[in-house]
Image (cartoon, rainbow, N blue to C red; front, side):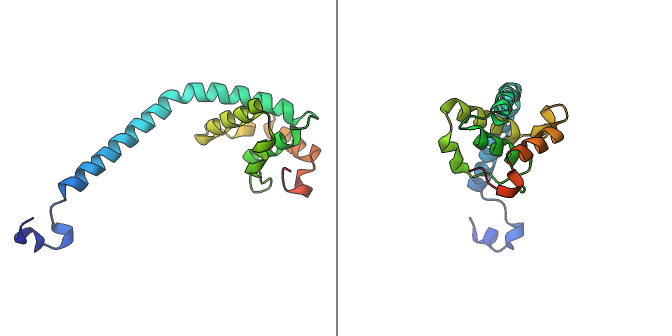
Length: 141
């Protein structure tokens, strides 16, 4: 740049073309990413809701993985009351783990809260918490 340009205060100097080009590229990439997320939303919602229904059945059961699934769902319902240890994913069958990922993808851009996908969802999740004594244990392990 010329000496005359550098004599201006920083807020009045013309923008650096390289910086402007980088910002444009970042904004374009961001817009493409948002468009892709929006386009993919119906599939993510469908798969997530189906997975959520399967996981609720497991959480209400008495299998070796039910407790982990219950605390995962409760963590999405209210993470402050029901913290979930991410290492608990390691104890899940792969299919259940994939269902959890589908539910996380659903909840990444929530249209509604996870419990609201069910009739009387709040009561349902509170009963789930009660059945696993979640308030007393405070953790999913």
